[in-house]
Length: 376
Image 1 (cartoon, rainbow, N blue to C red):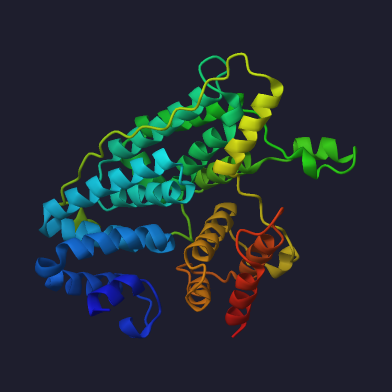
Image 2 (cartoon, rainbow, N blue to C red):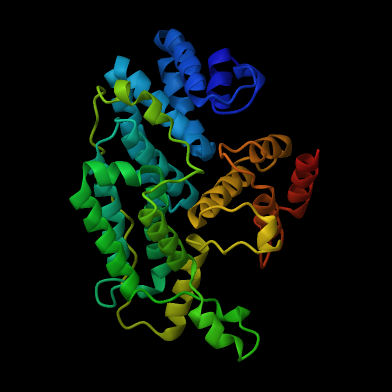
């Protein structure tokens, strides 16, 4: 592996390649310097690896966004090609219903907006496309409410992007941003509360379960709290702020329109047919279950609810993309770019996955080996 590839993979890490330091600004400057020296001979390879890193190391997307922005200052074709490739990948992920790719590419899209590579209006257009599709799906006449898991997923994708770009969207396109928020509120007011009745063992549990917020409602609450706190998120690095004076002179690009796959309408369908479709939708668009709370609250670092959600996302992504590479997995899990301790949260996340019903996403031995390596 060449030096520029290693630096690109390790940017933001406390590692020998960067002298063991964690100065994000210095990392980006060093990595950019090496990439630019290699640019003339390896332009296509750099573009390809940058996109691959953004997809498979999503906890480091802010660093990759700034690197794209820095190169875009010197070579506008590079920035344009990244935006076009991102559009193709996002459209392909939507068409193939690849939830993990949709979610991470949406985050990269938002971060590129922060680094002045993509226009804020393009981000809003993507949000509104997903929002419109979600609203249509749960409409009894025009859509198919059995596919609400798909609609919920689109809404969570929008909400989960806001910690990365909410501040910029409010500053640059406040009216359009407010329109998206109002649309989300409207969607939440008409969607059905989601609960799995198979987990209600006793009759006495029904009232309690009905009052508990499901994952979408819970995430919406986190975002509202974040909004009242001025969109300050400790768990999301914002390296673009250190390069703002340079990045602001870069050219921003429009993202071509995207489209969501249409679900079949629900006219005159039997209850059995609807239940079957809902089951199929849940398989394709699974709603993430909330983490088990194993440790007492006084043992866990105090953090905002949205920070808990984001760190959990980081951990689940690392487990997903490093399945089969348990040493690398443990290394990345132990060195996330967050300024607070999260060992207890990490333990709860891993054990939640091990005890996932009807079976864990990966083989139990994988989690066991990761735990052993984390202890080392």
